[in-house]
Image (tube, rainbow, N blue to C red; front, side, top):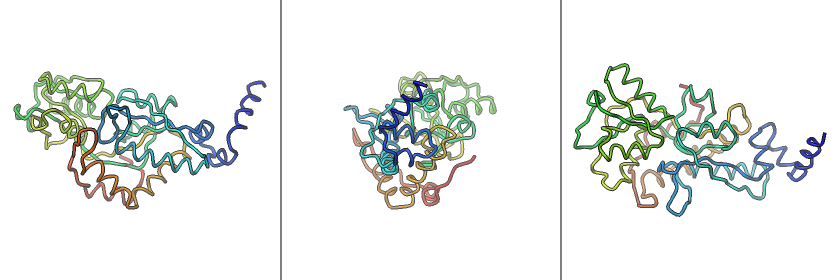
Length: 297
């Protein structure tokens, strides 16, 4: 009885309009009570989510989540909505989302059937395919060239699963070297301890572009997957929060804002060192923005 009274006492401090706007959504109700949204980020995943030397969290996905947060603030009729950034890695991101320590992960996470059994995804916000990065001097052009070599990828990613599957299917006898982060995997290639690094093509391109000698590395033409979508990640079975996120994205994607945002992160120099990916928007991605819908593989 004391607990119930205490809970009722707490809700007295939350504007009634905020609770009504939140409806049945656990996430929206929590945001309304605390006036805070917890955003998951990556330390080094440019241009989607990364941390600048001064500690600022930035990136394409981060900008999307800032816009979503502002729309949620308006929906809940809050005067102010604080953002708390929570660091996530490929190995911890789903645990943090499912445990409630992150409300929405805003990075570069591939949407597929297996992952949707654990978490839910927003409308796709980018599309990429799995490729491998190697040193140009090694002249590795195809998956067949990786036979008998050491190849690395980050644990907890779709990419390492795809690498293991290809290794079995093609009997390549690859020695797979799991790492905790993309940065560790890239460093193994830089140091010559791994012949290649398997990951999303866009992330490999960004890692090479931010290295001391970008011209030393080559991205494979051959892929380990068809193009797959990234999505923002949040808890399952919370339709009101999902609807709020997707409606905000729909407004961005179907208007002029997405073109400015895309240009900012993919065709112009980005902080801190002026890296420019020079990656024009593909036709398939433009179509995904023009007609946002849930992805089902």
